[in-house]
Length: 480
Image (cartoon, rainbow, N blue to C red; front, side):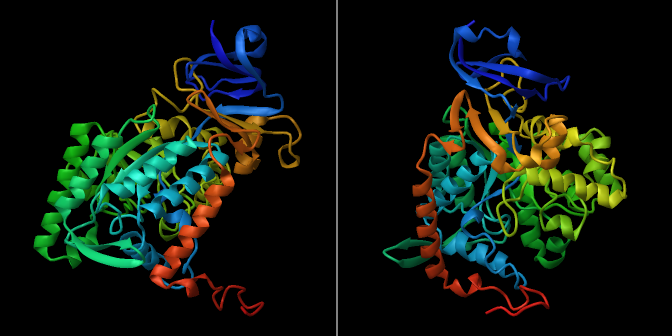
């Protein structure tokens, strides 16, 4: 048997249908795919071109983050303490102050963060959600895709128009001069389809495209002019149809009580639909999710999960596919999926006042095989099985917070963090080795991110939003 790389000696947590955990196990890789998984003693190490000693490590499938936002990595926590200021900043930046160089720098930084945390596949909405998608010109998505491809991770880039009414004012920047212009729905849709036609399933399948239309909720029907609401409904159906015709995931960000009923009536649901947040659903909406086999991105660390509860456990009990998302990276969370697994368990156990709710293994499944299933990629990634892409993460268990050396799956999920990830293989390529990226200059990525952030701050005049707020220390101190 030809073997390009043999990962051997670690605890292999397969996430296969039998959920095998193999002590002193090995994973054999050839031509970018897994060709064998089993005990190390049964693997022909002498026939491998490279043998990687993983003693003291957990060998797991690449982690999958089913909901996050491009752009946020350069905005982070700005203005988060002042009402809706953080969202206002996102809206201004993503429409008025973010040329392609911004999206390129941000995407490289976010992809590097994911890589170092063992996230090999992640969804990235090209903007902050329903009113601030950067889809006025394909150049912004191209910059994002180019950047992610450089780092070597997999990205599902979600693009879509803003919610009606249109047009919306966007701006380009040339020689530090802002040039605003109106953008129609048709122009945004044309941009999205051009991005899909150019980028979907490129770079050895590492770049995929999803289509998005904003969620329609009770307040939109109440507050919009009837003609605008009707237009929005038609536009949502149009985007959904294009996604179905092209075999793309259709996604929506920000469902809560009643909005899934609306989506169902508009024909938006199905196994190729991914809905995020989904808080305070009606009981019949839980049934609708299961009946339509719609996929759910649960984000327990997000602000939405503070405002209401996602009934993830109830949907799982009905047989629905619920996967884990970070909603990263801002305003107060990273893309560290270990953190989100731990938050996931705490979130539902607190609600039910029952420490047995949300089993540890299920938390891991939600950001591996369930995440792959939510994206329609379970035949490619999500578990360590023969024939799948060799997306493999090695986690260093020889650390004080992960000792003693027993119960490795418990320790991995309950105690590990993203900084314990030692090496990452994607498609058979070692893109992180011994805690260092192999494809890119990490310092150059950091420097470029800082440079583009400075430019952005000057463009929107928001340096005051970096200051500590008066109540930062509570009642125990004063902010200088």
